[in-house]
Picture (cartoon, helix red, strand yellow):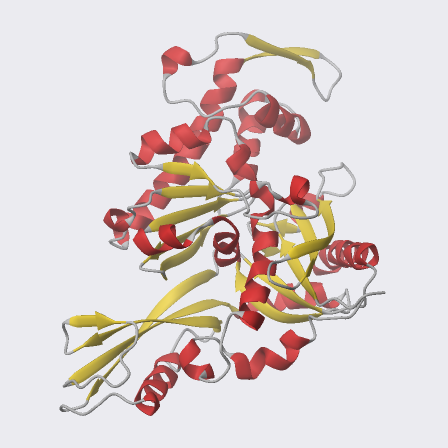
Length: 416
């Protein structure tokens, strides 16, 4: 059997677990795919395993993770390896750290930059948080000019801007303990929004200013890029499952039926005149024939989507980022499949909107080229870029903590 280097990616979401095995080369090719979708059966309410991105039942969630990973491993016919895993939920965010140094006309050396970045990384954060990773952004020269590469410049002072990606320790510990059931080792935990962005955004969007909305079942992960850097990272505890719960509450139907109505008949609508006035007939969970207003269904969906977008707009304005989104908004995640959400979001924000589909061609493309698999596909791109696309010579300057994870990350690659 030929030798291939493999990457293992894992997406633990509020409604599903997805595991991918990807072959590493000039591009990622998926060798195996496995998913487990949480159900809402009466005797095992699996939707409560993960709630709003937070693991609520370690043992049973760990069992589903194990099942999914081992199935992907078996289908790829490979040995076990380490994982790139996503982190979501309202405990994930970014924190800016700035360090200024007076140079009095001296030349900026690599040692100066390294020391400044190391000091910026040591910025105090709340005791219940830990740093997942960091990104070195522009350097400000003499309180006026910005540069991405300040080496050999002569200046009076320099300010380093470092963006720390942090998450609460307790939820991270629960995620690690759940994954431990599979006997796989976690090589890296990455914010879900970052992974999704790697799968669906292009370089031009990240440079000119773009807002990614990964609207999953339990969370909406928000990432704003500008000039190629992450300007805002956070997770909002609202998603597609909230839409489903509203349908259950208003129309008084079962959860599974509400989900089916949402995906089959539901839509986001701004224009009331274009709302359908017909009724939808079905047999409910009590075995009775029921008819509901199609317009009422769409109104319920539209109001909840509007709530989500309102929170997003508030966050953008509060962080003074609304006016830098020149490329518009990209929506991905399972809720991106909701009928009419692209036009609804366009009219709400009055800026360009597109649906983000993972950029991938190869085996399993008919399955994974779907917004709901953006995070999973992004985990493979992250691992590939980490191992192949980065130089290890100036590790501290690169903005990736290679020293602490390079030995683990190499465990990702296994021979077939």
